[in-house]
Length: 180
Image 1: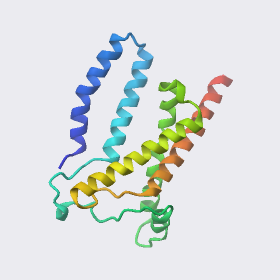
Image 2: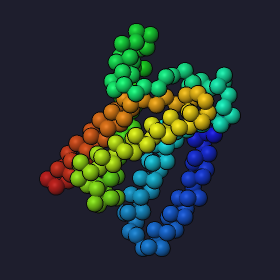
Image 3: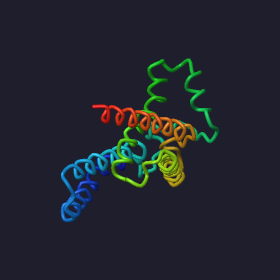
């Protein structure tokens, strides 16, 4: 099994090289902290959405191999909400987690990518990145021969909602800063 720890192990040397590069470029400590937070947020995001990958391909031992891909918008959300076998907390966790996971993105995008601070451009970029995550899950599942992670169009919708909520919170944050 290719666990998320593998991702963290390979990300550390990459991070060290990145830090050496930005220090060499004489970037301010404030930006180094911002870039570091963004880097580890992205690594954590990849760890949650892509890993662990059962590289052995042993379908019988993989506990997450019980879902079906969903390419119909709002289907999995309505299925979750109408499933009487799931507790309310599990239903909310499955939906809210996809939203909350992407809220921090709006605090990073306008601060790091100065030319992508317009909502429409950033949202387009985010939908593309969210779609890329789902395509990656689908591609890895196809290579393995079973769904190790479920590819779900509703995840893109929920991720985009989280991103939009992050934008609103970011704007509220900015208004709060400028009022003081």
